[in-house]
Length: 138
Picture (tube, rainbow, N blue to C red):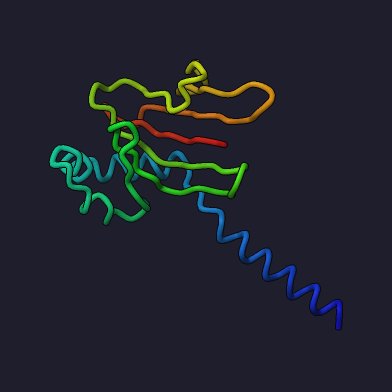
């Protein structure tokens, strides 16, 4: 009987944890922005995000220091959290959401990361003029 109870608890924990993972790929987010560019630009221009929030793949929009950030997924909880999405930069400049660390060229974009003792990291890459992919790890 204890074996079955253990198995049930293990299955329950596994199913709960799988609900904590929603990680769209960089390519999926890039495609979402390219396919919905007109709607996104109109939403930003009019400061009305209702139409943008109806786009499948966009879960929420937050203004971060006045910058529209579109959240498309994440994974983890507590001190091991990741966020994935994109932001709009009116002046077409990449932004550093971890200003304590310098953005450095990395891959096809730029990365800011905390050295020891920590693992916080931010990566950004241009999708289209004024639109940038963003992933953050805390």
